[in-house]
Image 1 (tube, one colour):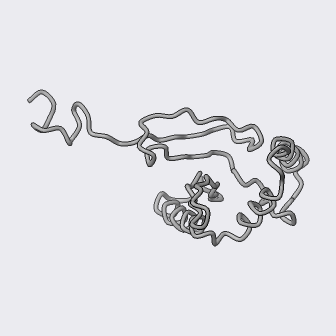
Image 2 (cartoon, one colour; image 1 turned 90 degrees about the vertical axis):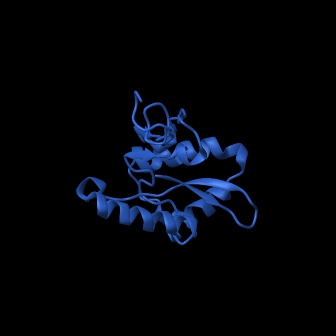
Image 3 (tube, helix red, strand yellow; image 1 turned 90 degrees about the horizontal axis):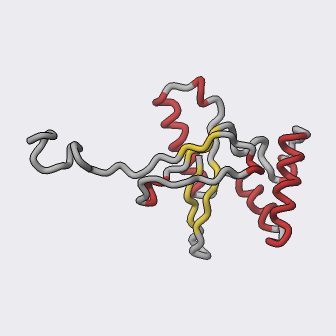
Length: 144
């Protein structure tokens, strides 16, 4: 899941990956509870491995970032190397990425497939709004 992570010092906002392992083997309640904890840890910057990885990436000059990400992707996914000593968590993006564009007030959005993540599925739920036939419409049910 992509989580908005504001930086109180610089005022910048970042999208950060929050990952839940074994989601297919958990009940909806277990998944919800774990996601709330993971998201809280990311927003409060308490996920040590994630913060270490962001620190490592922050050392790379912007001009070399594309090359760096391709190299890291190759090492982590093609060669299946564990780069946790460098602050890179093993498979940080998982198998599916969910980003809630509805929290940004968007109905729909096109989420870019990011090759270095090797994630094949992106889900982007949009904003929930009242509309024709919706419960928030004055006059009650449709057809009245």
